[in-house]
Image (cartoon, rainbow, N blue to C red; front, side, top):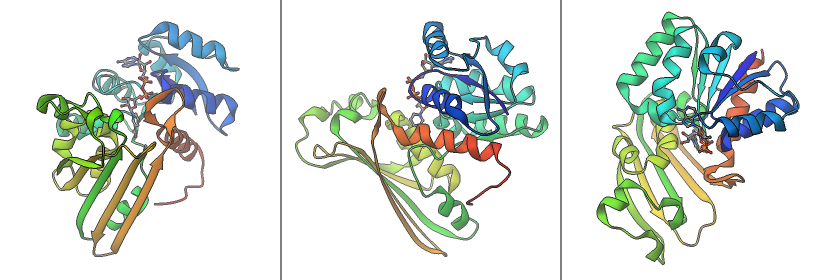
Length: 269
Ligand SMILES: NC(=O)c1ccc[n+]([C@@H]2O[C@H](COP(=O)([O-])OP(=O)(O)OC[C@H]3O[C@@H](n4cnc5c(N)ncnc54)[C@H](O)[C@@H]3O)[C@@H](O)[C@H]2O)c1
């Protein structure tokens, strides 16, 4: 499977390094980043030295594009890729909480016989949630707890003049549905998006955001109740070595998804 990567930051670089080290059936053939210098420097650090190309040149050369750039790239680049029959692995999954955009991308993918993959990202438990949602689900709750500095700059806090640096003990900053959480804390949007889309949607998935000065890791707890019983998952995420805002597990989940797509044997839900 020939792959092109759009976005050569923390996640894109990890994915490229993993393919360069060797993933059976996966070949890295093109890179793009609007910061061309970054793309060129990543390319020259890799043994396979993939060419840095434009999107127009990447699409005919690949079977799958990895989007590890931004929500803007999902809006601007992903429709063209799918329209030319090439699949996309989307890391900026928060963009897919926009129902109109999601429906448009799914329609284009269906019409052109290709797929849109959204990895689990920085959370776990989506396998169980997807299975459980075949039957009745009563509630899905995400509790995200982070060191206060990791939440700084969120629109919800800026609008209310909340200074997270002054928080001295664990404090719940936000409680609401995932749709509103996405607008309030866009940096957590990808986790809430994957959870909502795998389960009962953004309007029904509950999100709580906690600032906790005792933490060094970003912690996500997921609680699901339904006809199947209950599911509880807790992930304590180590930040990515090159971008502390991004959990290392997010890049690993993209690499695992690439392996899954390229392999005949599919394990898990
Ligand atoms: N799914 C998850 O769990 C999860 C977790 C963390 C981050 N993310 C998302 O994944 C994406 C990448 O994260 P990151 O930590 O690697 O970010 P990063 O800032 O380290 O790297 C992003 C790179 O993409 C490039 N870029 C941005 N928009 C572009 C565009 N329109 N065209 C071309 N290049 C563009 C930037 O120049 C930058 O080099 C972000 O949208 C982030 O929100 C998802």
